[in-house]
Length: 402
Image (tube, rainbow, N blue to C red; front, side):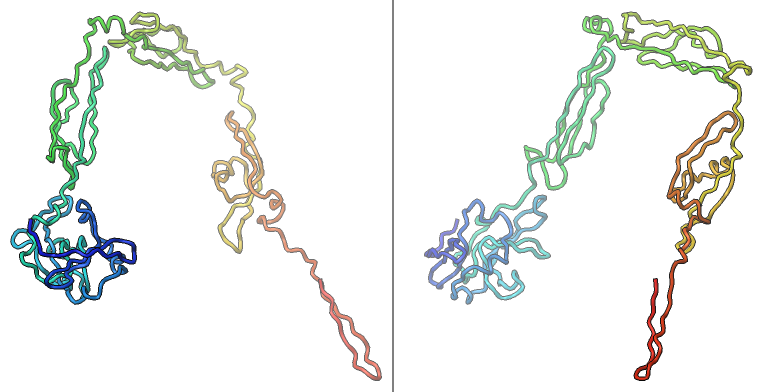
Protein backbone atom coordinates (compact mmCIF):
# COMPACT_ATOMS: atom_id res chain seq x y z
CA UNK A 1 0.00 0.00 0.00
CA UNK A 2 1.30 3.51 -0.84
CA UNK A 3 1.85 6.01 1.99
CA UNK A 4 1.11 9.63 1.21
CA UNK A 5 2.51 12.68 3.01
CA UNK A 6 -0.99 13.94 3.69
CA UNK A 7 -2.43 15.43 6.86
CA UNK A 8 -6.04 14.84 7.78
CA UNK A 9 -8.39 17.47 9.08
CA UNK A 10 -11.76 16.33 10.48
CA UNK A 11 -14.72 18.52 9.56
CA UNK A 12 -18.38 18.05 10.53
CA UNK A 13 -20.79 18.70 7.67
CA UNK A 14 -24.17 20.37 8.05
CA UNK A 15 -25.77 16.97 7.58
CA UNK A 16 -24.00 15.80 10.74
CA UNK A 17 -21.62 13.48 8.86
CA UNK A 18 -17.87 13.50 9.49
CA UNK A 19 -15.67 14.54 6.53
CA UNK A 20 -11.93 14.23 6.07
CA UNK A 21 -9.90 17.00 4.35
CA UNK A 22 -6.57 15.81 3.01
CA UNK A 23 -4.02 18.58 3.63
CA UNK A 24 -0.58 18.36 2.04
CA UNK A 25 1.92 20.23 -0.03
CA UNK A 26 -0.81 20.97 -2.59
CA UNK A 27 -3.29 22.53 -0.14
CA UNK A 28 -6.73 20.99 0.27
CA UNK A 29 -6.67 17.84 -1.86
CA UNK A 30 -10.03 16.27 -1.06
CA UNK A 31 -13.13 16.59 1.04
CA UNK A 32 -15.04 13.34 1.39
CA UNK A 33 -17.53 11.83 3.82
CA UNK A 34 -15.78 9.44 6.20
CA UNK A 35 -17.06 5.90 5.63
CA UNK A 36 -15.76 2.69 7.30
CA UNK A 37 -13.48 0.72 4.94
CA UNK A 38 -15.72 -2.28 4.69
CA UNK A 39 -18.70 -0.23 3.48
CA UNK A 40 -17.12 2.73 1.72
CA UNK A 41 -17.60 1.17 -1.71
CA UNK A 42 -20.75 -0.88 -1.15
CA UNK A 43 -22.84 0.89 -3.76
CA UNK A 44 -23.55 4.02 -5.75
CA UNK A 45 -23.80 7.19 -3.66
CA UNK A 46 -27.05 9.17 -3.93
CA UNK A 47 -25.76 12.21 -5.85
CA UNK A 48 -28.69 14.44 -4.81
CA UNK A 49 -27.72 14.04 -1.13
CA UNK A 50 -24.06 14.72 -1.88
CA UNK A 51 -24.80 18.06 -3.50
CA UNK A 52 -26.44 19.31 -0.30
CA UNK A 53 -23.36 18.72 1.87
CA UNK A 54 -21.12 21.52 3.14
CA UNK A 55 -18.05 21.75 0.89
CA UNK A 56 -14.98 23.84 1.68
CA UNK A 57 -14.50 26.55 -1.01
CA UNK A 58 -10.90 25.45 -1.66
CA UNK A 59 -12.03 22.07 -3.06
CA UNK A 60 -13.94 23.70 -5.94
CA UNK A 61 -10.57 24.72 -7.43
CA UNK A 62 -9.54 21.09 -8.04
CA UNK A 63 -11.74 19.20 -10.52
CA UNK A 64 -9.83 15.96 -10.92
CA UNK A 65 -10.11 12.70 -8.95
CA UNK A 66 -8.56 9.23 -8.83
CA UNK A 67 -10.97 6.46 -9.86
CA UNK A 68 -10.75 2.69 -10.13
CA UNK A 69 -12.06 1.32 -13.45
CA UNK A 70 -14.07 -1.90 -13.77
CA UNK A 71 -15.27 -3.93 -16.76
CA UNK A 72 -17.83 -6.69 -17.06
CA UNK A 73 -21.26 -6.99 -15.44
CA UNK A 74 -21.60 -6.45 -11.66
CA UNK A 75 -22.64 -9.66 -9.93
CA UNK A 76 -21.68 -11.72 -12.98
CA UNK A 77 -18.13 -11.19 -14.28
CA UNK A 78 -17.10 -7.76 -13.02
CA UNK A 79 -13.31 -7.31 -12.75
CA UNK A 80 -10.74 -4.54 -12.45
CA UNK A 81 -9.68 -3.09 -15.79
CA UNK A 82 -6.16 -4.05 -16.85
CA UNK A 83 -3.50 -1.47 -17.66
CA UNK A 84 -3.21 1.77 -15.73
CA UNK A 85 -5.63 1.55 -12.82
CA UNK A 86 -6.49 3.67 -10.85
CA UNK A 87 -6.44 6.68 -13.17
CA UNK A 88 -6.55 10.44 -12.55
CA UNK A 89 -9.54 11.86 -14.46
CA UNK A 90 -11.31 15.17 -14.86
CA UNK A 91 -14.52 15.34 -12.77
CA UNK A 92 -16.34 16.57 -15.84
CA UNK A 93 -15.92 13.14 -17.45
CA UNK A 94 -17.66 11.61 -14.42
CA UNK A 95 -20.34 14.18 -13.63
CA UNK A 96 -21.00 15.50 -17.13
CA UNK A 97 -20.33 18.96 -15.77
CA UNK A 98 -17.72 20.75 -13.62
CA UNK A 99 -18.11 19.94 -9.95
CA UNK A 100 -16.71 17.96 -7.05
CA UNK A 101 -16.86 14.24 -6.39
CA UNK A 102 -16.80 12.20 -3.20
CA UNK A 103 -14.89 9.12 -2.14
CA UNK A 104 -17.02 6.06 -2.81
CA UNK A 105 -19.12 7.60 -5.59
CA UNK A 106 -19.75 5.22 -8.47
CA UNK A 107 -20.24 6.24 -12.10
CA UNK A 108 -21.11 4.14 -15.16
CA UNK A 109 -20.34 4.81 -18.80
CA UNK A 110 -19.98 2.84 -22.04
CA UNK A 111 -16.62 1.44 -20.89
CA UNK A 112 -17.84 0.19 -17.49
CA UNK A 113 -17.93 1.41 -13.89
CA UNK A 114 -15.69 3.95 -12.14
CA UNK A 115 -15.39 4.32 -8.33
CA UNK A 116 -13.80 7.42 -6.75
CA UNK A 117 -11.03 6.57 -4.25
CA UNK A 118 -9.36 10.03 -3.94
CA UNK A 119 -11.63 13.00 -4.65
CA UNK A 120 -10.90 16.51 -5.98
CA UNK A 121 -7.13 16.24 -5.82
CA UNK A 122 -4.04 17.35 -7.65
CA UNK A 123 -1.92 14.57 -9.12
CA UNK A 124 -0.28 12.65 -6.28
CA UNK A 125 3.21 11.26 -6.12
CA UNK A 126 3.27 8.38 -5.68
CA UNK A 127 -0.14 7.71 -7.20
CA UNK A 128 -2.59 5.23 -5.58
CA UNK A 129 -2.15 1.59 -6.59
CA UNK A 130 -4.66 -0.99 -7.79
CA UNK A 131 -4.49 -2.61 -4.35
CA UNK A 132 -6.50 0.34 -3.03
CA UNK A 133 -9.43 -0.37 -5.38
CA UNK A 134 -12.59 -1.96 -3.91
CA UNK A 135 -13.00 -5.63 -4.81
CA UNK A 136 -15.14 -6.28 -7.93
CA UNK A 137 -18.74 -7.32 -7.35
CA UNK A 138 -18.87 -11.04 -8.20
CA UNK A 139 -21.74 -13.51 -8.35
CA UNK A 140 -23.78 -14.11 -5.16
CA UNK A 141 -23.14 -17.46 -3.46
CA UNK A 142 -26.82 -18.25 -2.94
CA UNK A 143 -27.57 -20.92 -5.56
CA UNK A 144 -28.79 -24.17 -3.97
CA UNK A 145 -29.95 -27.59 -5.15
CA UNK A 146 -31.09 -30.63 -3.18
CA UNK A 147 -33.18 -33.77 -3.50
CA UNK A 148 -35.65 -35.65 -1.31
CA UNK A 149 -36.18 -39.42 -1.59
CA UNK A 150 -39.54 -41.05 -0.86
CA UNK A 151 -39.05 -44.67 0.31
CA UNK A 152 -40.40 -47.59 -1.70
CA UNK A 153 -43.47 -49.44 -0.43
CA UNK A 154 -44.98 -52.87 -0.92
CA UNK A 155 -47.00 -51.51 -3.84
CA UNK A 156 -44.84 -48.84 -5.48
CA UNK A 157 -41.28 -47.80 -6.27
CA UNK A 158 -39.73 -44.95 -4.33
CA UNK A 159 -39.48 -41.50 -5.89
CA UNK A 160 -37.28 -38.43 -5.90
CA UNK A 161 -38.10 -34.71 -5.93
CA UNK A 162 -35.71 -31.83 -6.49
CA UNK A 163 -35.61 -28.35 -4.99
CA UNK A 164 -33.46 -25.54 -6.30
CA UNK A 165 -33.06 -21.78 -5.97
CA UNK A 166 -31.22 -19.65 -8.54
CA UNK A 167 -30.32 -22.89 -10.36
CA UNK A 168 -31.65 -25.11 -13.15
CA UNK A 169 -31.50 -28.88 -13.70
CA UNK A 170 -29.40 -29.17 -16.85
CA UNK A 171 -28.69 -32.93 -17.09
CA UNK A 172 -29.68 -36.21 -15.49
CA UNK A 173 -32.42 -36.19 -12.88
CA UNK A 174 -33.98 -39.57 -13.77
CA UNK A 175 -36.81 -40.70 -11.48
CA UNK A 176 -36.79 -44.46 -12.23
CA UNK A 177 -35.38 -46.95 -9.68
CA UNK A 178 -31.59 -47.02 -9.65
CA UNK A 179 -28.57 -44.80 -9.03
CA UNK A 180 -28.49 -41.55 -10.99
CA UNK A 181 -26.85 -38.13 -11.09
CA UNK A 182 -28.58 -34.78 -11.45
CA UNK A 183 -26.48 -31.78 -12.46
CA UNK A 184 -27.68 -28.28 -11.65
CA UNK A 185 -26.32 -25.06 -13.16
CA UNK A 186 -26.51 -21.75 -11.29
CA UNK A 187 -28.39 -18.96 -13.05
CA UNK A 188 -26.55 -15.84 -14.19
CA UNK A 189 -25.31 -13.73 -11.29
CA UNK A 190 -25.34 -16.63 -8.83
CA UNK A 191 -22.99 -19.46 -7.84
CA UNK A 192 -23.13 -22.34 -5.38
CA UNK A 193 -21.60 -22.10 -1.89
CA UNK A 194 -18.22 -23.39 -3.11
CA UNK A 195 -18.06 -20.68 -5.79
CA UNK A 196 -18.76 -23.06 -8.70
CA UNK A 197 -21.62 -22.66 -11.14
CA UNK A 198 -22.47 -26.37 -11.39
CA UNK A 199 -23.44 -28.88 -8.73
CA UNK A 200 -23.78 -32.66 -9.42
CA UNK A 201 -25.94 -34.66 -6.98
CA UNK A 202 -25.90 -38.47 -6.82
CA UNK A 203 -28.93 -40.36 -5.51
CA UNK A 204 -30.57 -43.80 -5.60
CA UNK A 205 -34.30 -44.27 -6.17
CA UNK A 206 -35.38 -47.45 -4.32
CA UNK A 207 -37.35 -50.20 -6.07
CA UNK A 208 -40.74 -51.53 -4.87
CA UNK A 209 -40.43 -53.88 -1.90
CA UNK A 210 -40.86 -57.58 -2.58
CA UNK A 211 -44.37 -58.88 -1.70
CA UNK A 212 -42.69 -61.80 0.06
CA UNK A 213 -40.70 -59.52 2.35
CA UNK A 214 -41.62 -59.48 6.02
CA UNK A 215 -42.69 -55.87 5.88
CA UNK A 216 -45.12 -56.50 3.02
CA UNK A 217 -46.65 -59.67 4.52
CA UNK A 218 -47.56 -57.67 7.61
CA UNK A 219 -48.55 -54.39 6.02
CA UNK A 220 -50.53 -55.18 2.84
CA UNK A 221 -53.30 -52.59 2.89
CA UNK A 222 -56.93 -53.71 2.88
CA UNK A 223 -58.07 -50.92 0.61
CA UNK A 224 -59.41 -52.82 -2.42
CA UNK A 225 -63.09 -52.03 -3.05
CA UNK A 226 -65.81 -52.97 -5.55
CA UNK A 227 -69.48 -51.98 -5.78
CA UNK A 228 -72.33 -51.57 -8.29
CA UNK A 229 -75.09 -49.04 -8.98
CA UNK A 230 -78.42 -49.95 -10.62
CA UNK A 231 -80.34 -47.52 -12.83
CA UNK A 232 -84.13 -48.22 -12.77
CA UNK A 233 -85.96 -49.32 -15.91
CA UNK A 234 -88.26 -46.88 -17.69
CA UNK A 235 -91.25 -47.19 -19.99
CA UNK A 236 -88.90 -47.09 -22.98
CA UNK A 237 -85.68 -48.79 -21.81
CA UNK A 238 -84.29 -51.56 -19.60
CA UNK A 239 -82.44 -50.67 -16.43
CA UNK A 240 -78.63 -50.74 -16.33
CA UNK A 241 -75.72 -51.45 -14.00
CA UNK A 242 -72.41 -49.65 -13.51
CA UNK A 243 -69.44 -50.81 -11.46
CA UNK A 244 -67.01 -48.88 -9.33
CA UNK A 245 -63.74 -50.38 -8.14
CA UNK A 246 -60.43 -49.30 -6.63
CA UNK A 247 -57.27 -51.43 -6.45
CA UNK A 248 -59.30 -54.24 -8.01
CA UNK A 249 -60.23 -55.60 -11.44
CA UNK A 250 -63.41 -57.27 -12.78
CA UNK A 251 -62.25 -60.77 -13.63
CA UNK A 252 -65.54 -62.64 -14.34
CA UNK A 253 -69.26 -62.01 -14.79
CA UNK A 254 -70.50 -58.45 -14.84
CA UNK A 255 -73.28 -58.88 -17.44
CA UNK A 256 -75.44 -55.79 -18.09
CA UNK A 257 -78.55 -57.38 -19.67
CA UNK A 258 -81.81 -57.66 -17.66
CA UNK A 259 -81.74 -60.49 -15.12
CA UNK A 260 -79.85 -61.87 -12.12
CA UNK A 261 -76.07 -61.87 -12.47
CA UNK A 262 -72.82 -61.87 -10.47
CA UNK A 263 -69.54 -60.05 -10.87
CA UNK A 264 -66.23 -61.21 -9.39
CA UNK A 265 -63.45 -58.72 -8.66
CA UNK A 266 -59.81 -59.56 -7.89
CA UNK A 267 -57.63 -57.22 -5.84
CA UNK A 268 -54.52 -55.92 -7.61
CA UNK A 269 -51.11 -56.98 -6.34
CA UNK A 270 -50.27 -55.47 -2.98
CA UNK A 271 -53.91 -54.93 -1.96
CA UNK A 272 -56.67 -56.92 -0.22
CA UNK A 273 -60.38 -56.43 0.33
CA UNK A 274 -61.64 -55.41 3.78
CA UNK A 275 -62.14 -59.05 4.85
CA UNK A 276 -58.50 -59.86 4.05
CA UNK A 277 -59.28 -61.80 0.84
CA UNK A 278 -58.18 -60.94 -2.68
CA UNK A 279 -61.54 -61.71 -4.39
CA UNK A 280 -65.05 -60.31 -3.96
CA UNK A 281 -68.24 -61.58 -5.67
CA UNK A 282 -71.25 -59.28 -6.02
CA UNK A 283 -74.79 -60.37 -7.00
CA UNK A 284 -77.25 -57.97 -8.68
CA UNK A 285 -80.42 -57.84 -10.82
CA UNK A 286 -80.77 -55.58 -13.85
CA UNK A 287 -84.47 -54.59 -14.17
CA UNK A 288 -86.42 -55.03 -17.43
CA UNK A 289 -88.27 -52.24 -19.25
CA UNK A 290 -91.60 -51.34 -17.59
CA UNK A 291 -94.87 -52.64 -19.03
CA UNK A 292 -96.51 -50.03 -21.25
CA UNK A 293 -99.83 -50.51 -19.46
CA UNK A 294 -98.43 -49.77 -16.03
CA UNK A 295 -99.43 -46.61 -14.18
CA UNK A 296 -95.87 -45.28 -14.50
CA UNK A 297 -96.06 -45.48 -18.27
CA UNK A 298 -99.32 -43.54 -18.78
CA UNK A 299 -98.39 -40.41 -20.72
CA UNK A 300 -99.97 -37.24 -19.24
CA UNK A 301 -101.87 -34.92 -21.64
CA UNK A 302 -99.90 -32.55 -23.84
CA UNK A 303 -100.25 -28.92 -22.65
CA UNK A 304 -97.52 -27.45 -24.80
CA UNK A 305 -99.94 -25.40 -26.97
CA UNK A 306 -101.06 -23.02 -24.23
CA UNK A 307 -100.57 -19.37 -25.27
CA UNK A 308 -98.13 -17.07 -23.53
CA UNK A 309 -97.59 -13.36 -24.03
CA UNK A 310 -94.16 -11.93 -23.25
CA UNK A 311 -91.97 -9.00 -24.17
CA UNK A 312 -88.70 -9.62 -26.01
CA UNK A 313 -85.89 -7.13 -25.30
CA UNK A 314 -84.66 -5.45 -28.51
CA UNK A 315 -81.68 -3.49 -27.14
CA UNK A 316 -83.11 -0.29 -28.67
CA UNK A 317 -83.55 2.82 -26.51
CA UNK A 318 -86.51 4.13 -28.53
CA UNK A 319 -88.30 0.74 -28.75
CA UNK A 320 -86.93 -1.40 -25.90
CA UNK A 321 -89.41 -4.29 -26.16
CA UNK A 322 -91.55 -6.13 -28.70
CA UNK A 323 -94.67 -7.89 -27.46
CA UNK A 324 -95.00 -11.50 -28.69
CA UNK A 325 -97.76 -14.08 -28.19
CA UNK A 326 -96.96 -17.72 -28.98
CA UNK A 327 -97.44 -21.18 -27.43
CA UNK A 328 -95.46 -22.15 -24.34
CA UNK A 329 -93.50 -24.87 -26.16
CA UNK A 330 -92.27 -22.45 -28.84
CA UNK A 331 -91.45 -19.90 -26.13
CA UNK A 332 -89.43 -22.47 -24.17
CA UNK A 333 -87.45 -24.10 -27.00
CA UNK A 334 -86.63 -20.66 -28.47
CA UNK A 335 -84.51 -20.03 -25.40
CA UNK A 336 -86.33 -16.96 -24.10
CA UNK A 337 -85.92 -18.15 -20.51
CA UNK A 338 -82.18 -17.62 -21.03
CA UNK A 339 -82.60 -14.03 -22.28
CA UNK A 340 -81.79 -11.85 -19.27
CA UNK A 341 -83.60 -8.78 -20.67
CA UNK A 342 -86.93 -10.44 -21.62
CA UNK A 343 -90.07 -9.98 -19.49
CA UNK A 344 -92.31 -13.04 -19.11
CA UNK A 345 -94.69 -14.64 -16.57
CA UNK A 346 -94.10 -17.92 -14.76
CA UNK A 347 -95.39 -20.97 -16.60
CA UNK A 348 -95.25 -24.70 -17.19
CA UNK A 349 -96.35 -27.36 -19.67
CA UNK A 350 -96.16 -31.10 -20.33
CA UNK A 351 -95.01 -32.65 -23.59
CA UNK A 352 -94.25 -36.31 -24.38
CA UNK A 353 -94.66 -37.15 -20.72
CA UNK A 354 -92.03 -34.64 -19.60
CA UNK A 355 -92.76 -31.60 -17.47
CA UNK A 356 -91.20 -28.18 -18.09
CA UNK A 357 -91.50 -25.06 -15.91
CA UNK A 358 -89.88 -21.66 -15.33
CA UNK A 359 -90.10 -18.69 -12.99
CA UNK A 360 -91.32 -15.20 -13.89
CA UNK A 361 -88.75 -12.61 -14.97
CA UNK A 362 -88.84 -8.81 -15.17
CA UNK A 363 -91.47 -6.22 -14.15
CA UNK A 364 -94.73 -8.18 -14.45
CA UNK A 365 -96.83 -4.99 -14.33
CA UNK A 366 -95.54 -4.03 -17.80
CA UNK A 367 -97.05 -7.15 -19.43
CA UNK A 368 -100.51 -5.45 -19.45
CA UNK A 369 -99.27 -2.80 -21.90
CA UNK A 370 -98.54 -3.25 -25.62
CA UNK A 371 -94.83 -3.91 -26.12
CA UNK A 372 -94.41 -3.59 -22.31
CA UNK A 373 -94.28 0.22 -22.57
CA UNK A 374 -96.39 2.05 -20.01
CA UNK A 375 -98.33 4.84 -21.83
CA UNK A 376 -97.81 8.46 -20.82
CA UNK A 377 -100.91 9.65 -18.86
CA UNK A 378 -103.03 12.35 -20.65
CA UNK A 379 -103.56 14.55 -17.60
CA UNK A 380 -101.67 17.74 -18.48
CA UNK A 381 -103.90 20.91 -18.54
CA UNK A 382 -103.53 24.60 -19.41
CA UNK A 383 -106.06 27.54 -19.25
CA UNK A 384 -106.27 31.34 -18.97
CA UNK A 385 -108.53 33.92 -17.30
CA UNK A 386 -109.21 37.42 -18.70
CA UNK A 387 -109.88 40.45 -16.45
CA UNK A 388 -112.00 43.08 -18.26
CA UNK A 389 -110.63 46.53 -19.01
CA UNK A 390 -111.85 49.56 -16.97
CA UNK A 391 -112.03 53.30 -17.56
CA UNK A 392 -108.66 53.64 -16.00
CA UNK A 393 -106.78 50.45 -16.92
CA UNK A 394 -106.34 47.82 -19.57
CA UNK A 395 -107.65 44.35 -19.02
CA UNK A 396 -105.26 41.50 -18.02
CA UNK A 397 -104.82 37.77 -18.41
CA UNK A 398 -103.65 35.01 -16.04
CA UNK A 399 -102.68 31.41 -16.87
CA UNK A 400 -103.14 28.13 -15.00
CA UNK A 401 -101.50 24.79 -15.85
CA UNK A 402 -100.98 21.30 -14.37
